[in-house]
Image 1: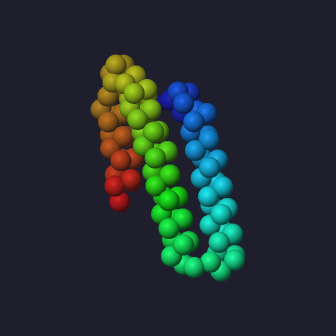
Image 2: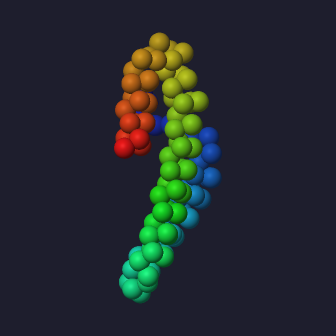
Image 3: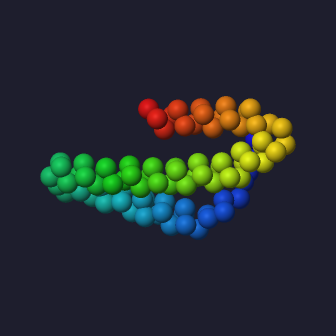
Length: 92
């Protein structure tokens, strides 16, 4: 599999990640300010959802790009094995 790929919606992914970065700083500030635990946990839950959305977009990009190319070039079994390994990490 290639190590370097061009993401089809790179700008959107970067915007999402920048927003997530800001949310992480917000959670840090909440903890520093001794905010109510449930409020902090709600923000952490939102962060996890936002990261999951980025991961799903990357999985979709990978499926339509890298995997499709690997299958067409005869490397489908390896691509599927790699994809299943990463899906198992997210299923934990």
